[in-house]
Length: 140
Ligand SMILES: [Zn+2]
Figure 1 (cartoon, rainbow, N blue to C red):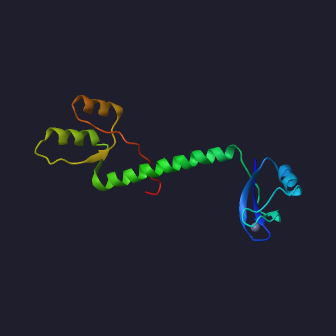
Figure 2 (cartoon, rainbow, N blue to C red):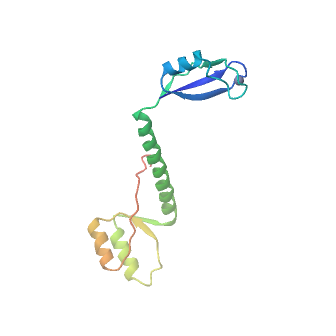
Figure 3 (cartoon, helix red, strand yellow):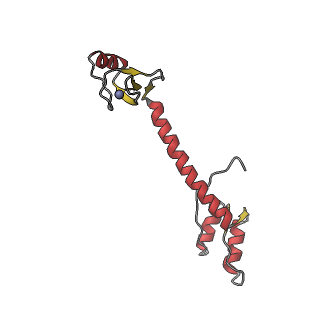
């Protein structure tokens, strides 16, 4: 499939149209099957814009967009956590325990990093943790 940007010479309307091939476009034009949606004129020309060809690259772009959108969501979530939780870094397991066992301590919301073993141990002790996806911000 090939996409052309077409323009009507009479009313100046430009619109995109898909063709099976450039040959098909020429054929339709010759038979005067191309006409303007707006004024019905048959003076339709291809604009000089490079034709857009649908291929595999297009699909990769879609994936990229999805990845970007997910990334954006995660970053929004991270922003919320950074604002509302205290960062304890690698001391997460220690801090989580001290909050859990020291009832006098006011409840704090913390975030940080822990190994899989630490998370398992915390769970066994009845300390619930939540794993969230994290994207390292290269700008920070
Ligand atoms: Zn027109």
